[in-house]
Image 1 (tube, helix red, strand yellow):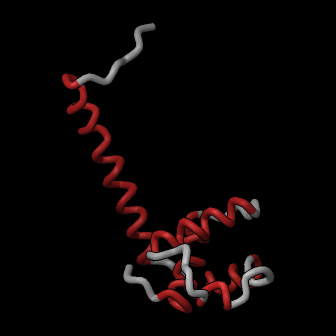
Image 2 (cartoon, helix red, strand yellow; image 1 turned 30 degrees about the vertical axis):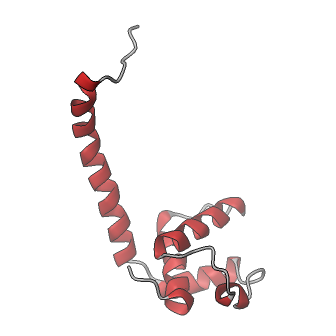
Length: 107
């Protein structure tokens, strides 16, 4: 079996195949942000996160999350660490709740 090697000659065709995939991912990310449900996110947060995270974690001087995308990344990180098996929608809902309640980052 011959292995394919990426060279200058075949880079452009490879990039044109990747562009639609990247566009679709961007569309999904934007769509999930637009349809996020902060009320549902609040319920998930209160049931799974609230016992360890008091409100003070969101108002401390040094913030780990400096954007809405970073809030989403932190929610995804911790739900994975806790083995909650949340969907992307669950993560988006909790991130939207946190952003609405505490952070107020632009979409």
